[in-house]
Image: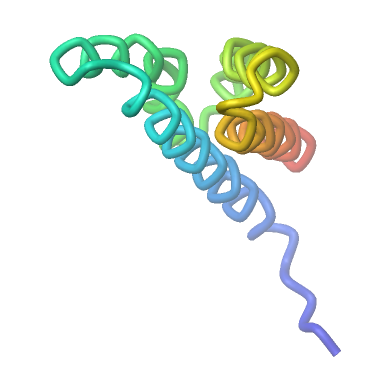
Length: 117
C-alpha cells in the first residue's frame, strides 16, 4: 500500500516536476543544437534557443503562480520546432522527438502546478 502524502506537499512536488521538465527540455535543446552549428556560432545560437526557457526560471524557482501561468507560453517555440522537425527532417527525427516530448512534459507540469495551487 502506498503512503498518502499530505495535500500541503503537492505544490512542492508539482514545482519540482516543472523544474525537472524544464531541465529535460534544456538538455534536449542543447543536444539538438550543438552538433548542428559550428563551434563559435553555436554558443550564440544556443543562448538564443535557450532564452525562452531561461526567462521564467527565477519565478519558477520561487514558486510564483503567475510565472507558471505565463511560462506555458514559453513552451510554444520548442513545441513548434519539435513538431516541424519530426515531420520535415528525418535526419534529426529522434532529437526533435525528444524535444517535442520534453516540451509537452514541461507544459503538463506547468499546468499541473497551476491546478494544484
